Image (cartoon, rainbow, N blue to C red):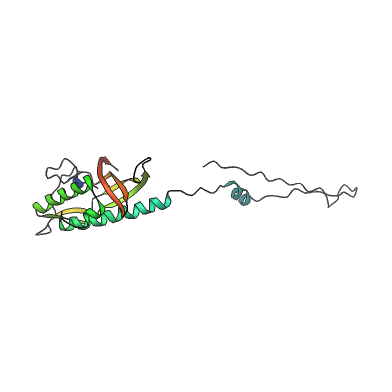
Length: 202
């Protein structure tokens, strides 16, 4: 979620399963009448391929962290909703920013928004996310999540606020890169502590 760090204006956001087989065998003992062609002789029942496949396919265990991950994903999406709205106005004083971020993430976003305001620029559009992975840090005082995904800023473009004209940016900047966000669960919900672009294309 970041502009490449080398951009001189400091706008870092825009520059940069074992299967167990089941053996089924049943033999039915029949009575013989002494005739070589006794039609009541014992037979071996057949088992259909589909029945065998069904018996051999174990059910995948449920993810014990599924509910927590869904909660984090919702908070992460909301974080980007707030951030995108703030950038469309270049408003570092947006009262919603402290509700979704704190510490380094909040300071970083406010500074970049201030730079945009000073330069008379805003950002149109919205970034896109894919390959999102959520994990949790062990042994932390408060539950802490790490969200990593591929951030696509190709449709999140800086423009001149007065004219709406696109701002020229280096052709070498990354438009899709890996971004890592760290969030902590507070009494009122998840809050982003750090928002870090990894500088690696995805």
